[in-house]
Length: 341
Image (cartoon, rainbow, N blue to C red; front, top):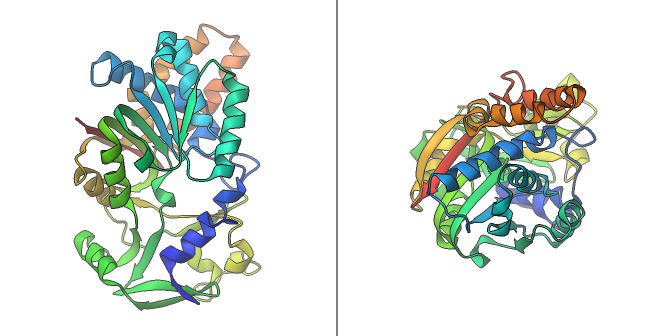
């Protein structure tokens, strides 16, 4: 069967036995690490931003705190924990929500959050944004949009897959229009941004949305599609006859299919258009390092320094610094922030 690449990617990642359904480990034991698994101060800085948004009057103390793409639930747990540290009264007024379509993953999240908070913090789950309605929300997502399915294009053609073998052939009309709009001759065209932002806009009357991801404000002009397996990165085509290398000679797409992560760089200009066409306004775009410092991560580290022993502080500082280190996560990832009034 010949499938457009987006359908092949959907099967790889999201089918019943796909990669994400298997609840892959993230961190040292997994295929890749994220900012969330690197340091609790990632969620802490976001919590401080939430408190600031409430204190400056944009959102009220009764808003919903929503995470999309929560995996184990570590980030929303860190946010709740830092709110308890910084402004505990908010735990009595805020509503914590996770959007999670897969029941198996929801069960894992429930277990982790129950073990973390018992009955002290209530969490609510929805399978889809269209099921969730609220007046005000602070919505966060980390590395969400690089996992949206995409089409891959090159020189007027798009990628299809047949038995884990790539074939470039005729481009469909919708993909061709997006290529023309963003002047993409070679690269990825994400699918689903417009549907996602429309659902979010219909779910929330007033909102701040923050997401972190790797990518650029403009198309990079090349194919970034890649596979992460056991903390090694493989350009997608290096596992095919198009560009087989000595590094990948003992691997194949078939051997990694549904057993590893498949991702690509986000085109933030496309994402911005999708949000703004759904009634949002871009408020900030910057590196992760700048965002976390602006949110107040350094202030949080000072609070830690004054409250724990020196060795514990140094251990947590070492983890947190990786979030803003330009050679690690600080400039590899960008943050974009939107508001809907």
